[in-house]
Image (cartoon, rainbow, N blue to C red; front, side):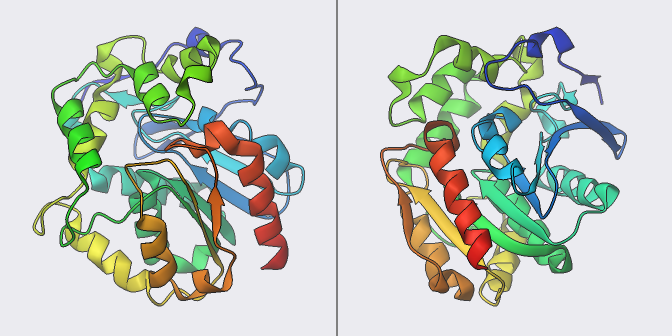
Length: 295
Protein backbone atom coordinates (compact mmCIF):
# COMPACT_ATOMS: atom_id res chain seq x y z
CA UNK A 1 0.00 0.00 0.00
CA UNK A 2 2.58 2.60 -1.10
CA UNK A 3 1.59 6.19 -0.22
CA UNK A 4 2.99 9.45 -1.49
CA UNK A 5 2.37 13.13 -0.73
CA UNK A 6 2.63 15.95 -3.20
CA UNK A 7 5.51 18.25 -2.14
CA UNK A 8 4.31 21.41 -0.41
CA UNK A 9 6.22 23.63 -2.81
CA UNK A 10 3.83 22.57 -5.58
CA UNK A 11 1.13 24.58 -3.80
CA UNK A 12 3.04 27.80 -3.20
CA UNK A 13 1.58 31.02 -4.60
CA UNK A 14 -1.43 29.49 -6.31
CA UNK A 15 -3.68 32.20 -7.76
CA UNK A 16 -6.60 33.21 -5.52
CA UNK A 17 -5.98 30.44 -3.01
CA UNK A 18 -4.66 32.07 0.19
CA UNK A 19 -6.32 29.59 2.54
CA UNK A 20 -4.36 27.98 5.38
CA UNK A 21 -4.09 24.20 4.90
CA UNK A 22 -5.54 21.94 7.60
CA UNK A 23 -4.77 18.25 8.01
CA UNK A 24 -6.35 15.35 9.86
CA UNK A 25 -5.53 11.64 9.88
CA UNK A 26 -8.38 9.35 8.85
CA UNK A 27 -7.86 5.57 8.80
CA UNK A 28 -4.10 6.09 8.67
CA UNK A 29 -4.30 8.55 5.76
CA UNK A 30 -3.60 12.28 5.89
CA UNK A 31 -6.55 14.29 4.59
CA UNK A 32 -6.28 17.96 3.67
CA UNK A 33 -9.09 20.47 4.00
CA UNK A 34 -9.79 24.18 3.90
CA UNK A 35 -11.69 25.57 6.91
CA UNK A 36 -12.80 29.19 6.69
CA UNK A 37 -15.37 31.34 8.48
CA UNK A 38 -17.78 30.73 11.35
CA UNK A 39 -21.43 29.81 11.64
CA UNK A 40 -23.53 27.20 9.87
CA UNK A 41 -21.36 24.58 8.18
CA UNK A 42 -21.05 24.02 4.47
CA UNK A 43 -19.15 20.90 3.42
CA UNK A 44 -18.02 21.42 -0.19
CA UNK A 45 -16.82 18.31 -2.02
CA UNK A 46 -14.97 18.14 -5.32
CA UNK A 47 -14.98 15.48 -8.02
CA UNK A 48 -12.75 14.19 -10.81
CA UNK A 49 -9.94 15.28 -11.35
CA UNK A 50 -10.10 18.43 -9.23
CA UNK A 51 -9.49 19.37 -5.59
CA UNK A 52 -10.58 22.03 -3.11
CA UNK A 53 -9.07 24.67 -5.41
CA UNK A 54 -12.28 24.28 -7.43
CA UNK A 55 -14.16 26.13 -4.65
CA UNK A 56 -11.78 29.07 -4.30
CA UNK A 57 -14.21 31.59 -5.88
CA UNK A 58 -17.01 30.45 -3.59
CA UNK A 59 -15.18 30.19 -0.27
CA UNK A 60 -14.72 33.95 0.42
CA UNK A 61 -18.38 34.69 -0.32
CA UNK A 62 -19.75 31.76 1.67
CA UNK A 63 -17.34 32.15 4.59
CA UNK A 64 -18.40 35.76 5.12
CA UNK A 65 -21.58 34.33 6.68
CA UNK A 66 -20.89 30.65 7.30
CA UNK A 67 -18.16 28.11 8.07
CA UNK A 68 -16.90 26.53 4.87
CA UNK A 69 -15.04 23.21 4.86
CA UNK A 70 -13.65 21.96 1.55
CA UNK A 71 -12.00 18.53 1.75
CA UNK A 72 -9.60 16.88 -0.68
CA UNK A 73 -10.42 13.22 -1.31
CA UNK A 74 -7.60 10.68 -1.03
CA UNK A 75 -5.66 10.78 -4.29
CA UNK A 76 -6.37 14.46 -4.88
CA UNK A 77 -5.14 17.89 -3.83
CA UNK A 78 -2.94 17.93 -0.74
CA UNK A 79 -4.32 14.66 0.65
CA UNK A 80 -2.32 11.42 0.63
CA UNK A 81 -2.22 9.42 -2.59
CA UNK A 82 -1.93 5.70 -3.27
CA UNK A 83 0.32 4.86 -6.18
CA UNK A 84 -1.74 1.84 -7.23
CA UNK A 85 -5.19 2.19 -8.82
CA UNK A 86 -6.29 -1.02 -7.08
CA UNK A 87 -6.14 0.75 -3.70
CA UNK A 88 -8.98 3.07 -4.70
CA UNK A 89 -12.57 2.00 -4.21
CA UNK A 90 -16.01 3.47 -3.69
CA UNK A 91 -15.94 2.09 -0.14
CA UNK A 92 -12.55 3.63 0.63
CA UNK A 93 -13.74 7.08 -0.40
CA UNK A 94 -16.99 6.68 1.58
CA UNK A 95 -15.10 5.45 4.65
CA UNK A 96 -12.71 8.40 4.44
CA UNK A 97 -15.54 10.91 4.23
CA UNK A 98 -17.39 9.20 7.11
CA UNK A 99 -14.27 9.34 9.26
CA UNK A 100 -13.67 12.96 8.33
CA UNK A 101 -17.16 14.08 9.34
CA UNK A 102 -16.95 12.18 12.64
CA UNK A 103 -13.43 13.38 13.42
CA UNK A 104 -14.41 17.03 12.95
CA UNK A 105 -17.62 16.43 14.94
CA UNK A 106 -19.64 18.49 12.48
CA UNK A 107 -23.43 18.54 12.39
CA UNK A 108 -26.22 20.52 10.77
CA UNK A 109 -24.21 20.37 7.56
CA UNK A 110 -25.21 21.89 4.25
CA UNK A 111 -23.70 19.38 1.83
CA UNK A 112 -22.46 20.70 -1.53
CA UNK A 113 -21.63 18.05 -4.14
CA UNK A 114 -20.56 17.94 -7.78
CA UNK A 115 -19.33 15.15 -10.08
CA UNK A 116 -18.01 12.08 -8.15
CA UNK A 117 -18.66 13.70 -4.79
CA UNK A 118 -22.36 13.31 -5.61
CA UNK A 119 -22.47 9.49 -5.38
CA UNK A 120 -20.13 9.52 -2.37
CA UNK A 121 -21.67 12.45 -0.51
CA UNK A 122 -25.25 11.36 -1.16
CA UNK A 123 -24.40 7.84 0.02
CA UNK A 124 -23.10 9.33 3.28
CA UNK A 125 -26.22 11.46 3.57
CA UNK A 126 -28.31 8.29 3.50
CA UNK A 127 -26.14 6.60 6.12
CA UNK A 128 -25.94 9.46 8.63
CA UNK A 129 -28.89 11.76 7.82
CA UNK A 130 -28.90 13.19 11.34
CA UNK A 131 -25.70 15.08 10.48
CA UNK A 132 -27.18 17.02 7.55
CA UNK A 133 -29.52 20.00 7.35
CA UNK A 134 -29.53 20.86 3.64
CA UNK A 135 -28.34 19.58 0.30
CA UNK A 136 -26.95 21.33 -2.81
CA UNK A 137 -26.59 19.10 -5.87
CA UNK A 138 -24.59 20.28 -8.90
CA UNK A 139 -23.61 18.48 -12.11
CA UNK A 140 -23.65 14.94 -10.77
CA UNK A 141 -25.65 11.72 -11.04
CA UNK A 142 -26.52 8.47 -9.30
CA UNK A 143 -24.93 5.51 -11.13
CA UNK A 144 -27.45 2.86 -10.09
CA UNK A 145 -26.57 0.28 -12.75
CA UNK A 146 -30.18 -0.08 -13.86
CA UNK A 147 -30.29 3.01 -16.08
CA UNK A 148 -28.35 3.34 -19.38
CA UNK A 149 -25.15 5.37 -19.14
CA UNK A 150 -24.75 8.31 -21.50
CA UNK A 151 -22.42 8.12 -24.49
CA UNK A 152 -20.40 11.14 -23.33
CA UNK A 153 -19.50 9.43 -20.06
CA UNK A 154 -18.64 6.13 -21.77
CA UNK A 155 -16.21 7.98 -24.05
CA UNK A 156 -14.62 9.69 -21.04
CA UNK A 157 -14.37 6.37 -19.20
CA UNK A 158 -12.71 4.73 -22.22
CA UNK A 159 -10.24 7.62 -22.47
CA UNK A 160 -9.38 7.42 -18.77
CA UNK A 161 -8.97 3.64 -18.88
CA UNK A 162 -6.43 3.94 -21.67
CA UNK A 163 -4.67 7.06 -20.38
CA UNK A 164 -3.25 6.47 -16.88
CA UNK A 165 -1.15 9.63 -17.27
CA UNK A 166 -4.25 11.81 -17.49
CA UNK A 167 -3.61 15.27 -18.97
CA UNK A 168 -5.25 17.10 -16.06
CA UNK A 169 -5.12 20.55 -17.60
CA UNK A 170 -6.63 19.33 -20.84
CA UNK A 171 -9.44 17.58 -18.93
CA UNK A 172 -10.24 20.82 -17.08
CA UNK A 173 -10.29 22.86 -20.28
CA UNK A 174 -12.47 20.34 -22.10
CA UNK A 175 -14.88 20.28 -19.15
CA UNK A 176 -15.63 23.98 -19.40
CA UNK A 177 -17.89 25.96 -21.68
CA UNK A 178 -15.13 28.53 -22.18
CA UNK A 179 -12.02 26.52 -21.48
CA UNK A 180 -9.98 28.54 -23.96
CA UNK A 181 -10.29 31.55 -21.65
CA UNK A 182 -8.85 29.95 -18.52
CA UNK A 183 -5.47 31.37 -17.53
CA UNK A 184 -2.38 29.11 -17.71
CA UNK A 185 -1.60 29.71 -14.03
CA UNK A 186 -5.06 28.41 -13.09
CA UNK A 187 -4.51 25.28 -15.17
CA UNK A 188 -1.17 24.90 -13.39
CA UNK A 189 -2.98 25.06 -10.03
CA UNK A 190 -5.24 22.18 -11.04
CA UNK A 191 -2.17 20.24 -12.15
CA UNK A 192 -0.21 21.07 -8.98
CA UNK A 193 -1.21 17.92 -7.03
CA UNK A 194 0.12 15.67 -9.80
CA UNK A 195 3.87 16.18 -10.43
CA UNK A 196 4.01 12.98 -12.50
CA UNK A 197 2.00 9.89 -13.38
CA UNK A 198 2.72 8.17 -10.05
CA UNK A 199 0.49 10.74 -8.33
CA UNK A 200 -2.42 10.22 -10.74
CA UNK A 201 -3.62 6.74 -9.74
CA UNK A 202 -6.66 8.16 -7.95
CA UNK A 203 -7.62 10.35 -10.88
CA UNK A 204 -7.13 7.46 -13.31
CA UNK A 205 -9.17 5.10 -11.13
CA UNK A 206 -12.22 7.27 -10.37
CA UNK A 207 -13.96 6.99 -13.78
CA UNK A 208 -13.52 3.21 -13.68
CA UNK A 209 -15.22 2.95 -10.27
CA UNK A 210 -18.53 4.23 -11.63
CA UNK A 211 -20.98 1.29 -11.62
CA UNK A 212 -22.50 0.97 -15.08
CA UNK A 213 -24.04 -2.51 -14.75
CA UNK A 214 -26.60 -3.79 -12.24
CA UNK A 215 -24.15 -6.02 -10.34
CA UNK A 216 -21.14 -3.68 -10.39
CA UNK A 217 -19.60 -2.73 -7.05
CA UNK A 218 -21.45 0.24 -5.60
CA UNK A 219 -24.57 -0.14 -7.75
CA UNK A 220 -26.71 -1.62 -4.98
CA UNK A 221 -25.65 1.19 -2.62
CA UNK A 222 -26.61 3.74 -5.24
CA UNK A 223 -30.06 2.20 -5.61
CA UNK A 224 -30.47 2.33 -1.84
CA UNK A 225 -29.39 5.98 -1.92
CA UNK A 226 -31.96 6.70 -4.63
CA UNK A 227 -34.67 5.19 -2.42
CA UNK A 228 -33.50 7.29 0.53
CA UNK A 229 -33.52 10.53 -1.50
CA UNK A 230 -37.07 9.84 -2.62
CA UNK A 231 -38.07 10.40 1.02
CA UNK A 232 -35.67 13.26 1.89
CA UNK A 233 -37.75 16.15 3.20
CA UNK A 234 -35.09 18.62 4.33
CA UNK A 235 -34.21 21.49 1.96
CA UNK A 236 -32.53 20.48 -1.31
CA UNK A 237 -31.36 22.75 -4.11
CA UNK A 238 -30.60 21.29 -7.54
CA UNK A 239 -28.37 23.64 -9.55
CA UNK A 240 -26.86 22.38 -12.81
CA UNK A 241 -25.12 24.18 -15.65
CA UNK A 242 -26.45 24.34 -19.20
CA UNK A 243 -23.37 23.05 -21.05
CA UNK A 244 -22.33 19.79 -19.41
CA UNK A 245 -22.77 16.77 -21.70
CA UNK A 246 -21.73 14.35 -18.94
CA UNK A 247 -24.58 15.07 -16.51
CA UNK A 248 -27.11 16.61 -18.90
CA UNK A 249 -30.65 15.79 -17.82
CA UNK A 250 -29.75 14.57 -14.32
CA UNK A 251 -31.09 17.82 -12.87
CA UNK A 252 -34.59 16.80 -13.92
CA UNK A 253 -34.02 13.38 -12.35
CA UNK A 254 -33.05 14.87 -8.98
CA UNK A 255 -35.85 17.45 -8.98
CA UNK A 256 -38.37 14.72 -9.64
CA UNK A 257 -36.81 12.29 -7.15
CA UNK A 258 -36.32 14.53 -4.09
CA UNK A 259 -39.59 15.84 -2.62
CA UNK A 260 -38.08 18.98 -1.09
CA UNK A 261 -36.32 19.95 -4.34
CA UNK A 262 -39.72 20.72 -5.82
CA UNK A 263 -40.06 23.58 -3.31
CA UNK A 264 -36.96 25.39 -4.58
CA UNK A 265 -36.42 27.53 -7.69
CA UNK A 266 -35.22 25.71 -10.80
CA UNK A 267 -31.82 27.33 -11.19
CA UNK A 268 -29.68 26.74 -14.26
CA UNK A 269 -26.18 28.23 -14.38
CA UNK A 270 -25.86 29.68 -17.85
CA UNK A 271 -22.82 29.41 -20.10
CA UNK A 272 -20.95 26.96 -17.85
CA UNK A 273 -19.68 23.43 -18.42
CA UNK A 274 -19.02 20.49 -16.12
CA UNK A 275 -16.76 22.47 -13.77
CA UNK A 276 -19.36 25.15 -13.07
CA UNK A 277 -17.65 26.27 -9.85
CA UNK A 278 -14.64 27.36 -11.91
CA UNK A 279 -16.68 29.31 -14.43
CA UNK A 280 -19.48 30.71 -12.27
CA UNK A 281 -18.33 30.30 -8.68
CA UNK A 282 -19.47 33.70 -7.44
CA UNK A 283 -22.96 33.28 -8.90
CA UNK A 284 -23.28 29.80 -7.41
CA UNK A 285 -22.15 31.01 -3.98
CA UNK A 286 -24.76 33.77 -4.01
CA UNK A 287 -27.47 31.27 -4.94
CA UNK A 288 -26.41 29.05 -2.02
CA UNK A 289 -26.51 31.95 0.43
CA UNK A 290 -30.04 32.81 -0.71
CA UNK A 291 -31.04 29.14 -0.47
CA UNK A 292 -29.77 28.89 3.10
CA UNK A 293 -31.48 32.15 3.99
CA UNK A 294 -34.90 30.91 2.93
CA UNK A 295 -34.55 27.40 4.37
